[in-house]
Image 1 (cartoon, rainbow, N blue to C red):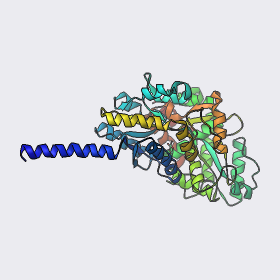
Image 2 (tube, rainbow, N blue to C red):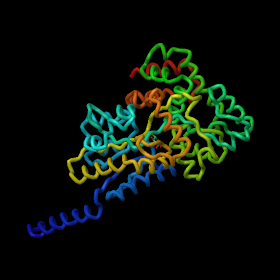
Image 3 (cartoon, rainbow, N blue to C red):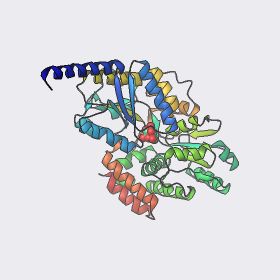
Image 4 (cartoon, rainbow, N blue to C red):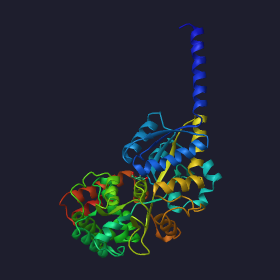
Length: 410
Ligand code: GAL
């Protein structure tokens, strides 16, 4: 190629890239794992809001949290990052912060007064060394109970269980009525989620925190053994199809009245909504046992991989601003099953479960950091291995406690 043709080729390339930029203003490729019916419906609210703000949403959905996060990190390390990537409100993205692989969003955070409007557990998760490295999208609570009103009626269960004894009594009634008591997804992350829900709801917030601090007295206490034994007792109430079942397929069993209840994060609500069911009508929800149960604060964030490309930085800031705006927060969370990250929004249109969650979040004493805020991804993975081994083998509670105690100390 002589210098004229190479010049012409260069001009064409520049023209093409300008054209592409004009065709896709504020292009944002977003890696996430929201692939279920409810999740996809909620995601559309984010994509539509971003488009309305003048952005171009390029969707990169990868099924499963772990594969999606691994893809995002590999793309960052490989020098070909997406514009944004979903993580949980947790320590999952600390390593990429420390590795200098993320842009901070301080400018957007300061302009929107995040220090004032965001709950403490979320602020503690997204701020590192005083800088904001993640944009919170929602507040999920990972330990809700969702139940089929028809199944409860058929089993003669009058009210929502107020403690673990009433809970197992209700499961016995469901079993006697020929209904699968617990809709269960036998995947390690779901087994760990259910374990943590019982640790919070049966053990209480104080035990929960002490266990995750590796407190020897707490780990060897009868209270913790009661939690561990109660978890394994659930095995008597799940169906043979539960191994490796996806969480949303378990939710479908409750939606169809084939199972009595599911212990799951409130992202499950998005599936009930996608099936046109209404909280308080076809299904019920309770966030634990009794009026003071702990509220495990979890949820999702988007992180913004490091880039010096001015257009990408502009897209990242537009995305951060759009996601956290009051209107988008209500529209997205209403479909996602979560509650908004900010309290200065009009949430009257949200369902009764969300209203309960919003009310509880006003009581800071009930806010409980989720386990992935308390331990590193490596320790979290080791604990997940301990729980899934205990659930899937004949290991005793004492052996499981010994393994858990060793793993939580890192
Ligand atoms: C959680 C996430 C939720 C939902 C769930 C199931 O980690 O916070 O938004 O996606 O996984 O996929």
